[in-house]
Length: 111
Image (cartoon, rainbow, N blue to C red; front, top):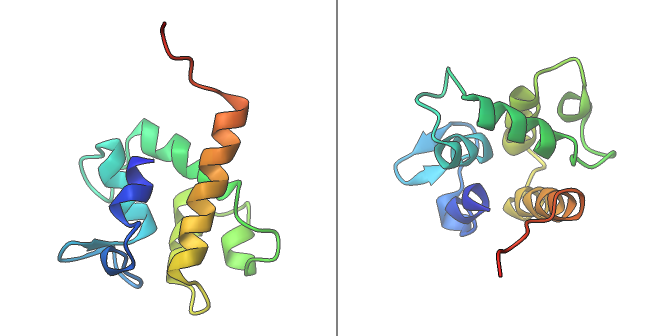
């Protein structure tokens, strides 16, 4: 949810690069939200969440974004930077992932 909120405003999202001022791509938002130290060295949490997000890529997405032979982060970069990808597509991917994770691992709130 943190990663989604970082680019929820269209003006905060960027394609073709990791960061441009205060604008970030999908992977940059995830990296920042997970506290990874650098783009080149994603931490364990970021790698795990990237795999979960990549699992929610639509089946009709371009091949490079669905190719299971590529690491999840590369697939997410390909999706983010795809010429046909819109900000709404990226938000929908986050929403599908958040919904899926809420169903499979609901958070229990102490009483």
